[in-house]
Image 1 (cartoon, rainbow, N blue to C red):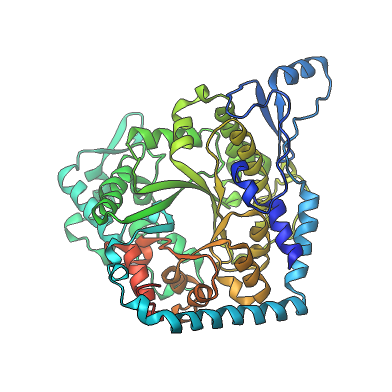
Image 2 (cartoon, rainbow, N blue to C red; image 1 turned 30 degrees about the horizontal axis):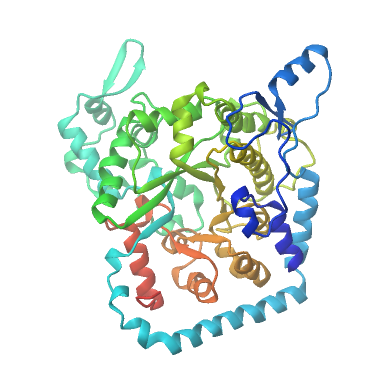
Length: 516
């Protein structure tokens, strides 16, 4: 168990200011000329075999002109072979009978300790007024995807309002000489807004979604129409994401401002199919005024290599598209000040999303540049290369007084238990994590590491695990670092306050007290 905990300390990135209070190895000493807090722009970053290498730009250009090799500046990161060795060690530890036995006993002990605590303190805690007013308790939705962050009613009201009052908006351009207004767009698809209701949108989860992630993905296509999804839920359409921004601002954010005590960490996607994605996202954010004191943004990277393969040559190109624009603006903010402002003030971290239930391929013994097949790389391959790039980028930004980002991927929602092994090593926190219930060693390690788990029981109930079987109350009673989150209100929630709905259902189902 200590070896496993030490592996987490070896990998997970922690800000240098926090390392004195965190069980991590000491930071690599800065190279000459790397004074913290000074925006020195004489750097260049190159991704070689998926690994970030940083050089002095002047020396790099001089060496290139002379045809000489130049050693990169020393940033602490761990190579892929060492990672794979450590991952196999971790996977072996959590399957050891002795470790599982010890972990099971200690988890039961933690649950008993909580029961004793509540028995001794129930009367005192339950009678205090400050715990009674849940509406005025600060609540943060720690895991929610912005493309489904609105409720079905908010989406319906927006669509009906636009159709009634703004039907002459140009929705798309079919050719250089052919524009299509919103009214024409809806008419061509036989959509009469006056007859629309929530059920007609066909986005709410039903029994057909359980263990059918393909049906869940299709629910994003409003009324089964991909064009309507593109019009209303994307930032890269003809309208520049105007409708999406208006739904978010006037629906989701306004509701949170009305609630006053509700906050969120909304995810928005960058796929890695083009380098321009980052700049496009930042411009959408600033042009439409998407800053809100009730929200901080996380950028989610969909594990959808198979879906974008026609636009990239290899997995290496995905990594280049994801991280080289960030290196450029981190080294010299003047390259793209709009993107720099978004990264510095409004982005809190990275997520990585997609269906975990698909069969994983073995961890490949090839660099990202040689992954040219159409299949999706395995989960742990994604985890390593995202982690190493985020960690080195964070190191550089921290040394120069810039903001840094957490790595908070989806893990343990479904699929192989080994996903939770790799994220225990490299992730600051995770989303879901319910598969930890299947292995006491993994569950106990997540307790020891206090690795955050944003659990979404209503979402899990619709997709992978019936509500009454959800391990959230057990995790909570044993002291794991759990929170409740909504995941996708558009599909899973019926009220206009999805996070309050999530808490209320949990409180009723599991008899949580006001203190809980």
